[in-house]
Length: 339
Image (cartoon, rainbow, N blue to C red; front, side, top):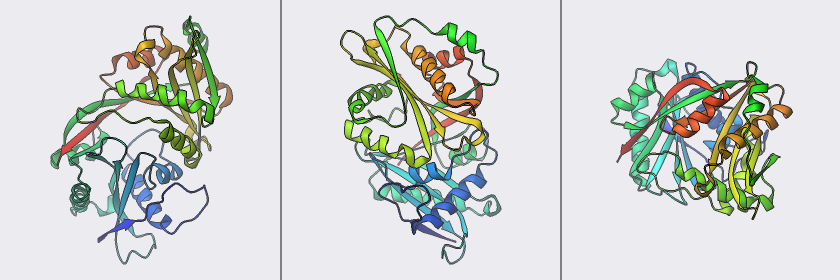
């Protein structure tokens, strides 16, 4: 076994375009998928894996390594591997690891520990002092994290809204009045004129619970533009609703739902929802999420479940989700390790 670097693309390529590193990327993806068969819910697509794990992001550099069984000549002998995301525009003291995977048939040989040690060496080489990751509460990931000195940073949970059983009349009756505000929706990436407003409301995510060692995240316009350009590379589209104050047009909040273009498994993913502090108290969070859900439902009849993540300490957003009918799906742990 040897640990081999995977060439990282400066940006994701179009679907179907073949690049020299694709064999190793596909091998790492297959190892991650094989190691995650006990994790329920929507499966991470290869296109999204390429975009989010094996390509540089607007605000972070990626680094990926394959554990190769044999000569590593691209013949599918990838036994595992890992990837790091290293922020560049903010939080340059930290990094996150996802995935770290060893195929089940190769477990029990210390390969995961070998990969983890290699990742720590790479973190130190980049001058990083805080490593973050997330695992299901139960299972091998939790045991591995504890055994390697990681401590709990954040408790998280996923909740699911089953659209097949949803009471749509009740949901529409729940829609709150939003006096003094208007909602605007669109499908797909934001157009250039929307980028300043999207940048402003995304900054509201800095109020969400996070590890104590993580500082504010940069949501500058240039970074937001670059993120919007990357949306199609994951073979996804998104539904977005933004709130504006009527008297001056000031952006107040937003929410998003992401839908795979192949509608795999009938799953959609609820993305970020944020309301800027000066606009809170008007029930905009509930209004945004309901309006965006109705928009997605009208355009995506094949989608029957929406999954969302929250820190368990985010009581306000959890309450909104549960009022809409989201029910607990599973629980996760955010882990940290100071180097």
